[in-house]
Length: 462
Image (tube, rainbow, N blue to C red; front, side):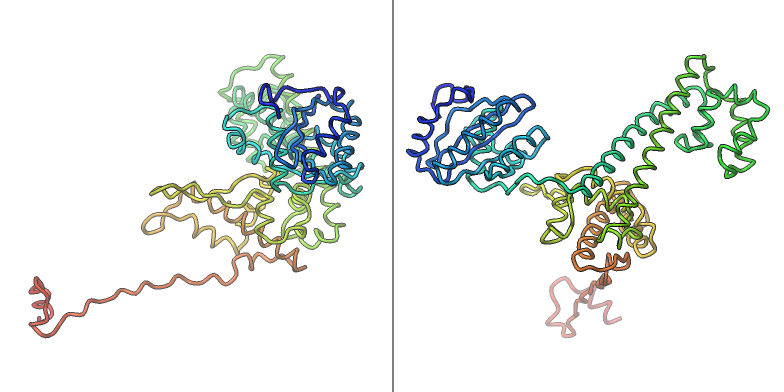
């Protein structure tokens, strides 16, 4: 790469084939790598020759100039006998070019974005970050063998269906949470007593708010008790219905205007619609899990939605060589930050997909209710000299430990084609060893007694 304006880009249309072929021959050919930094409208390409030299970055319009880029890369592959192309693993802007390179039988490797970020000052001694430098770092990391093969593969119909339902579930969950936040703020302002009597996201509360829109209208309706009973499908007790009606008539909230009532109804309607879509996606995921060859054996113990999310985020656990590799894919492997006398606590890396950890956390909350695991969790969260107290830190730490152990157990049961059993999550835990207290032997002969042991000798003689 030239020493002046080394990251100045050249349009890929200005690249001449014959000079490029000569450079490839002069560099020694075999071992040439190419790094691609991909954005929405532009792909920045840097060639690293086998002798360690670099070419000035190419600017490729995404996606209109991808075909021209493929032609140049095929020329390099033919001249150099081998060519490895590195891509970052972030985003979806690179799917089109990755597919085109795979179909052209070019070797594509995936480079972690964290590795590129950590390498930026090592590369040229400057802690700067821009597209041209990123492409050069990706090419060098590819040459060092820091990537993994990443050919494009068309997902099967079953995988597409699974991905569709998981994405739907995640999207509508987020939407429901946002609308419920707005609903809680408005209800707290105008009817603060309701959230203590009914769960605002429940079917009964949503139907109540959509029907009336304000506590004053509920209190003025003579048939409100009958409607509340119908909204809950007979599950709401009489004393709870009376408490809701009493709170509507004596609420300390601010009076509502017509616009505020309409807005409250709209929010409740949005929450209700999102909850219906969530239920529909969960039903579809349950059907997928129950008909799946592997997941069907673990639906009852683990949960259909949790299994589908794991399969969608990290794939089949059997494709990992060990339970540790499976934990690393989920972002549950441990890291340590210690230096000198400071001994830092272990923490999970959180490098994997966050959605999988979210549903594993829900699974851990369900698992600690199992009698086989409840006692372990209660013992773990206790702190203090007599271990009578507990802390929020220990509770969360216990849940994270439970997530790790459940993930390992799930990998083992699937790998060995076994049934998942909560009683084997902590098998054969040894009892705490008794600490032996060594008693100091008191010499019987006065001549053997150490200096200053007169009191001890006197007590022994007595």
